[in-house]
Length: 223
Image (spheres, helix red, strand yellow):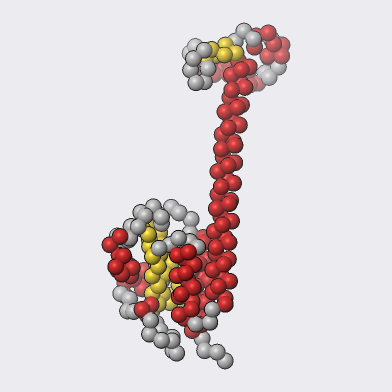
């Protein structure tokens, strides 16, 4: 059957839904190839097979959506626990300890590095206040959203110390006090696909906002 003629037949059947009511016996006489090869089947049986396949696809999609929903619920619960913990702590060392604990135990992030540009008055010297290259500070200021991807081309790999050579992917989150960038949080993984360019960053953004608020709160002297 030529393509134009086949299209005419298809168009006719679509615009005349009563055709097979008028020629009901025709349905029992039409046989089409089985969708998975083998014997020919009736038009009605082929329609049933098509509906079953669509149903399987719908069930698969629904299961996928449910899995995504459950995963998001689990992440939301972890972020909530981190938020509650950050609200409770009162010192810089406590904020840093709590952050590392939750990222390691709750989020399974094995490597965490925090760098802050300036040490607030009254806060002890900590590794997090080590000097940062000016270009990294400028990069952090340009981060409208967290960066996820390779460590190649960044000086942040060195932040992970003895593990630097094994880090294959990272997430970089700018920390801000209002419109001023005060530092950057780096999350590292040996898995090259743990942090990738197309991944969603909403929870990373929320984490950065919570950590920034906690750091600025404990840096301010108690009145």
